[in-house]
Length: 201
Length: 201
Image (cartoon, rainbow over the protein chains, first blue to last red):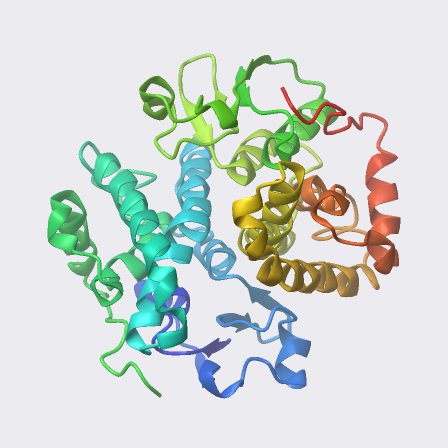
């Protein structure tokens, strides 16, 4: 199993985190998105969308989209909930993550981490949208330990990735005590790994 | 079963289309997003994200996010693929739909349909992003009749919703012959319904 990856990416980190929880080994292919390494003809043959992460199986089949990779890997493990309704809720939160959370929080982080002067103007709309997403999570966590089920699932792994580094995007996580407590529960997992301390390859 | 809905919404249409395929009846609650009817305290109690569609079950449980609702309804039907790999591919395309396709094609359609003069500037970046998404679909359909499986699945229903009205957003579908042929295959379904001929409530 081969994971095409870029270390600072939260989308890729989701996959690395689940692979660690499951104790699965894999070959790591690091690509630098800033050098166009996901936009080459060779790579776009593998993933026409030109993004990481991409999981390539031993038989050559490939899966793109971080949350679809989580679904693929979590089958028959505790991280894919047992009931159909909880499975639906896990997906509901994962679609929320890709539609409301990642496009605001991850993009604000990207603009600030790489000091992209030409895109600083976007922060004016990104910040309130990110705060709104964090507000929805905070309210849910007021009465739930996790997002879709009684234990951590693919939904929690998905949301953890960019939430725990939201500070890089200028969000003040201490304003969200329920989120802070959930982040602690997540990082207490015995097989937890960190996103990386090395933002640049 | 109750569907909170706004007729011109492609996200809601996905759900109506699958409900029609399955021959399921439901109560229809129409909300006008332009009058703030999804932003009231009552509605945000039901769906904290303040969006349609929202499915409410007879026992009061609720599911938000159009693609999660499709997953919920498609269980044990031909529209949820049989194998785990095909299920993964269906979700891969549905995450593509919410991350790459809907945020460009549906937003361009929204800006043009409602002649939102203050947002016309966004079209400059939305149009090439929408063309890129259509290009990825066109290439896939060069060698496949459907997206995730040998027959139509939730992935096709999801992508059909905003693709078939991409013309409203200024996209020229006749540039994409494989997409045109797939749209015809989809609308040939014996239980096909149209999004609506009435764009305003």
